[in-house]
Length: 239
Image (tube, rainbow, N blue to C red; front, side, top):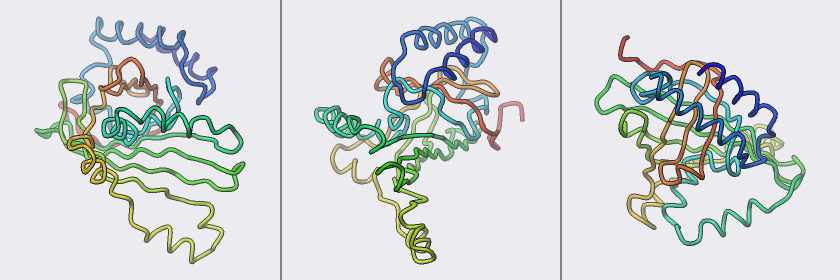
């Protein structure tokens, strides 16, 4: 398992984030998932307590923005047109638009029944050659565990935070940035398609420093590899 993990991390580090799908990396991901399952290592992520903490994205099989549960929920609300909409924004070339890095901060109580907690996704988006940047922040509520390796999330809100345009306005910009309310994206999606704001994050491998996650609705298309930045305070079954 450790050898396979090291090889996968090396592949991710040499594959530029934002380059999209890599058949070689995808094969190595499947190898590690199978080895972990066979050895009983990196499993039962919903209950192990290891999900809690801050994570940085090091591989995405699609655009970096797709690591955010907001886009999973958006696809559920607009199944017939989401690909076309995503395609328009994805086609904007650098340096007009640059995306990344992306992080996730997870705080769950894995001893609670149901498992509860919070989930925050942050994706940096730069436009106009970097002249304007913001952190697209989506906040979710962890509603429950879904099996041993899934978390049911409800998308609550989305807001561009830390806008450089607003920062250039000095104290006024800081006031606007801190006081402007987040957009209730989950509520808006629910009005379009009831139930669309709830998605399932499937974590097929998770240990002290590394995890693999998939979007339950698109298990083969939406695959992400994350490296731990720091541990959280999530409880474990043994605590």
